[in-house]
Image (cartoon, rainbow, N blue to C red):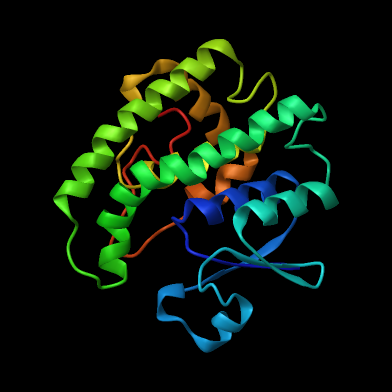
Length: 221
């Protein structure tokens, strides 16, 4: 069985978990306190971060590389289009969320509110929290624009781009930092993603000291 070293609310780990689950790859989840830099974990990934996936006898790091490997070795159901231009758009949006959205929103909200406490690094920086709360509005509006022109984020079919976006938004939804009333079309898109069997394990996550809101695992939120 595959083994994934992860942190429950990490959007990068969640993206990998969604890809594995969508392709029905059984995986053992091992929660890793990577910030403690345990020697065994550092041997698995000298970069000292999650996710780390052991699959096919290979120890893999970096969520983008992991998801590409999963797609190439388990192509069904496909999470990347066959057309090169369409694949380009999927990869662009994955990078948008893992780079821009992460820097402007996830790191400002999730990391300040949750990670600092878990890692015992002090209290949230109010300036960062305010900046993240402001930035997420822009990103939700961008999602609205995309979904006004497409059935899914990158086109007519669900792709890895949808999983990347949902991974970040679900982590933030766990701490009630997504205003679903801002856009009905984004809420409807997330409800479709949230209802997929691949999402069930994410909705069952529990982080000690941080109970999720009632709507978090409600499919009819």
